[in-house]
Length: 156
Image (tube, rainbow, N blue to C red; front, side, top):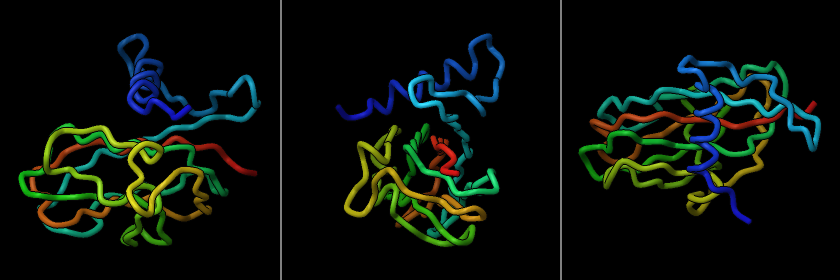
């Protein structure tokens, strides 16, 4: 059964804000498997130019496994734009190993690496200590606003 990205995203959001305040989900343990499921988010704003404008640095100091990534564009780009989300050695490395060619210009959307991988994307990707998850805008991304959520577990 495929992940229901929207239900999971809003479930995480509800857990994180269960009493109207933000709560850190770090360290929550998956009862079945005994490992912590961690999440983080990056507020995305397009600069109006193509290229990598937004990134997330692996904060753990060790290797992690990306379970899924959620690109929630709350405001679509004014142009016919797409986005790639992937893993890079630097904050400016363009990559599409999580999501490839997500349409961010047609409407406000919620795309996930599990349900919207495109040609080259997908889940189950390793991010080494010191590596980044980057968002690379293509075509005309002006006006686009959103949030990138990363759901991951430490591997070591």
